[in-house]
Image (cartoon, rainbow, N blue to C red):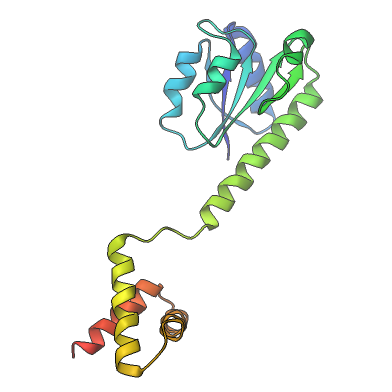
Length: 182
């Protein structure tokens, strides 16, 4: 579930938005009145949706947006005039007064985008350490030397061994090296 942080200068407005979102099944992590409060929460998160008003206690939305790391999206709720200056950046905007249906569908779209990005990131293969790369390289060199394989054949052998045994390629390479020591 995507975390949501609401940042509004007037805490009553933020609490009203939190209430709307909570009634519709969203997880609102916090309601803040300043950008500094919101930024302090970012350290513990890998992603979140920031719902912000135009002017905060200590900054405006665009300054807050500059503090957002990759993976954080912003929804600006402001008057039409403020929204006109918001175009040509990565901030989604809704004009006030707020239409609750538009608000909920926009939040739904944005949280789904964050969830999709999170799933895609999880599916990416993990980067191997230098030690793991070294183990794979040594196992391939051993296979190439002992079994007269080419580098692609040795790599394919490790991949197939990995799939056959249900282990990772590093573990398959370790098995090859271990068997050679016996």
